[in-house]
Length: 455
Figure 1 (cartoon, rainbow, N blue to C red):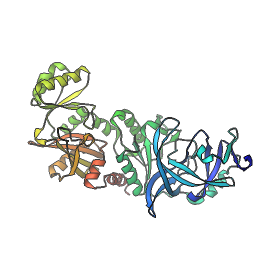
Figure 2 (figure 1 turned 90 degrees about the vertical axis):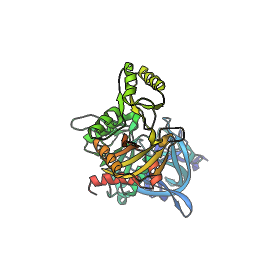
Figure 3 (figure 1 turned 180 degrees about the vertical axis):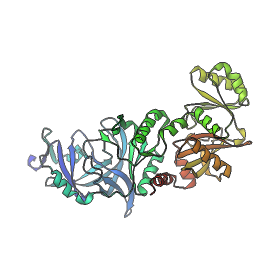
Figure 4 (figure 1 turned 135 degrees about the vertical axis):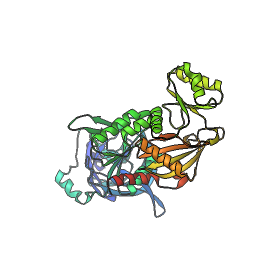
């Protein structure tokens, strides 16, 4: 039966007629089980009561101007583990593969292969019973010339209608990141998810560059939205600073993000702007613990790690003895801490104002779980719509301005002394606030970028 099988080299050109792809270069890899196609802007939708998925394909390596808009029936969504051990949820489609004179249906996954050498990977499931591979050969079925490639794709040159925006973050599956990508695409922009850990940079006075895994140069972006996890603040801000050096518009600057992550410095900046905060103390030596507790009005009080986030590293000490124990325990670990008065009348509630470009676009009240004093949504807190006062709006806007943040989550607490500012977050989450208010906060972030470009 050998005469009925197609003989392929390790690299071949093939086509996908149903997707409108006249030719694409594939890596023929019998070591890989699943076939994969490069795709961006992947989105599921319903067509004739069936599940489909739409996507964009740049079929020619290192060419983002040529684009094919494809759609296909959705077969499955499964976890695929790469050769490097990275696990990723991928959509699976079925379509016809044409290679040489032969044509048959195959299943393949959709994923961003920008960092790979080939836009297409042909795995053994698609080849089984139909193909023989000679790994020493290439292009046994021929290959197109640059001229013929240009002719084949002459109608696929993409006219630039929007901006090229990069989302600099860590997890593409996170609700906030998905929504920002979706909002940008809905408004006609070319969105790219840039994994912080897969970026690296070239420092050069004449030609600074940012590279992506696989050697792709990321120097053609109009705007970058940094969404940097606290654990990689240093590297994420270094990349953001590099984009700024390339004259790319960034939604929050590296300087603003860095100072917002320093709890002590940010509180000093806020106080310098005349914004009230709960009485706060900071000391280096454990010998000053007794006076530090008195300074903030005694127990109960809050002890905060300077490096904490999302409510982590925040402890309520209900008695003076408990406060001394917690403070001294942190000090023995050489941890920097703030000691802050406990606002009992807040009853485990705070207000999150989402500020974009100098305006409060949405606000929610967050309420802690029973027995908990931290109202963070990540810790099980609940969100509800609230009407913020003019004074609270003013504080939120003033705080974002003091921190030089175009996008900020500003946390305010209501006390007997009036509203007090708790914290300013440079990468506020969208899930709680969009879910409670039904507002398109992600869309407002994209509008802020458009405003800068006067679109």
